[in-house]
View 1 (cartoon, one colour):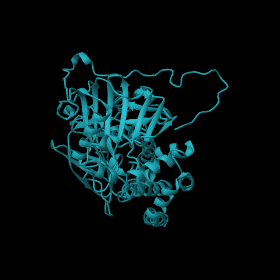
View 2 (cartoon, one colour):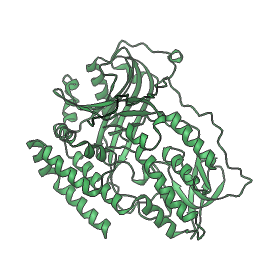
View 3 (cartoon, one colour):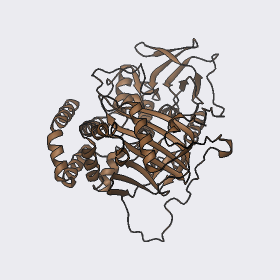
View 4 (cartoon, one colour):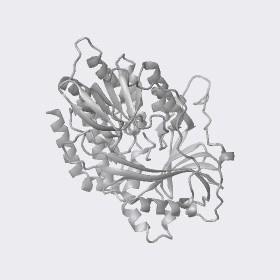
Length: 495
């Protein structure tokens, strides 16, 4: 779920409606996955189930062949907005802001490099954004293995983002809208009353009315005024060629909470019972599959070595022999915790802005959806004849991204994360057993961050009603403290 909960997400039932018109395919233009040419792979043969950790990934980092408009040092070093980072968040915001006629520069040490991680999204999310042409594979259904005896089939289509297509689309939109790029790393950001300046590692200094940091979780330019008591989602993912696998090709496996693969692993099973991980799988064909062993959320962060050991045991149990590793990835996603200080001189978008879903880790679809709203707020300030700058601009921008309703909703999602942190394997199974019995409006909305605060509380009541007696006892024993914190934080937000 690193793309998950990747449940953004990657992730995580059933909506079917009668139709009076003749039946037609849900995806009449189903894209064909663009796999790396297998003739270029030097396939490594292996007779052991566990040696996939020693196989060298065959796919190497690549740069896109695209002619982007670079900043000319001879030109004026002043912009309306500077965006730090050319990831999904940075490019999306840059092209949206520039689309309003605002002068934008995007800084990144390697703006044409491919993004390293796989992204999974709900198909309806990208369809609503007009980005469904950037999905290279879709599955009409998803499934969740609660345990060895219970599987839930979810009637909501899931897709894998084609990272190359999405980046090329965003780069193209940036170029069309007049965004300039500068290939450099930002060393320092300074602020005067109405203008900010950026110093780069190549000696270049640029100025702008607003700096937006989209450089990700490791950013050093966004400030916090509260302890960052985050949870962490950690996963090991591999795109592999295999002899065979047991997954249905028309279903994406959102979560597999079974632990039968640890029956002969006495050193792993007890810890998994307390701090569980699940398998996330995207089967592309009978011999090509993306697999990811994921800790949904933990605090402190679960050991990466532990994650890989559990994955080795799981694949051995499932009879999956890896013949070649095409890509591998380590995914660590900080989740929940407080928002950055609001407002502050540097604006943020993406992983360092609090957008990551605290209960699932989903980010990409939410970022794509919120960037246009933030861009409109920025344009209202910098594109107007009165030119709102300085403190009023920072206030409007931050509150444009995080209005009161959205901040309160995020407190509820934080409550969900804190609840999950208190559950062991059996408690987690019971939770998701009840969660996916909710009306699709509720579980869809929760995973896609689109429920109002009132709807979230109604969802909580419905979840309690669907829960087993044991799960209700879990909630009564473990939820009061997180709920009290949530209510207190909501009250502070409203003051």
